[in-house]
Image (cartoon, rainbow, N blue to C red; front, side):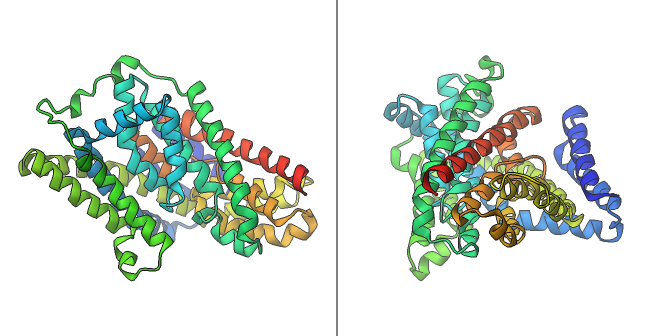
Length: 426
């Protein structure tokens, strides 16, 4: 069967299973992965491909997600997240805009938009509770800020390798990337404010399930340390060559240190039994998130096995399109198939670079065109799709409307800004 037809059928099937039948995402993703492999004629290697895809996601994100879940729940139960939310509200007249900027600033230094989201989603939840806002709104303004800078600003892993493959000077790409990314982040913010104000507001004002009736006011050191110390360790590793921070600055290790600090302050503030109970509950919650992510990794691996990404890229490259659209659409095709933005920008240049002389575009414009495509189309095979959904406690349809469609808006905005830059500067 044609690989593009398989790709479209797999999307329809997972949408039917998760949105229509409301089957658990993990089961829906695994079943779709099996069917995809069989339709591709790779039945003998399908299970191996599925487990390999799951294993890659688990190895990259299990410790991060579990640690972030523990830190977030402890901060919420001890009042630390509430204190941080209060500070943001005091500093910024528009706390949602502050959340957007928070995600924008930290995604690149942390070298992971997912990590930035995991660290700051507890703060987003507290702002949501204090301000009486829908879950999807506070989560989306944060996630759009992380995506904007991570997809466009050097030295993010998304653009890092492509910069050198295209022979671009970093000084030529840094400032334009920041400008384009900032405007795209603002576009995502306005999209969220316009189209993500959904849900029953009364459900979000009080969070009875996780409210601690005997809450003691948390100090700022206890509130900020479990978040700030991991961020400092990671940033130190990024910007220095100190051997010690090669270990301490690894995201997994840094967040584990944050977990220890969160447990320590919870023990001092309450008692060890309370801290242990919160850790166990956070681990159980993170298990659901990790399973959904692994299911997305399995689907991405089986879709990549069909070769549909390269086939779609070759097809688009041969169409009579405006030059600036070719890198963009090839990137969209690769991103839609396998779900990882970093992988998209590792694969797309291999298809686009031989076409650069024919396209007649400056390499900087080619880069931003490809990077713009990484916003589209993020769906069920994207691990961030499920992290966003589960940590914000959203329905699948809410994620499609906010994360997926919002990404389309941001990607188109980025492409238009790239076109403007081309007309004005080249």
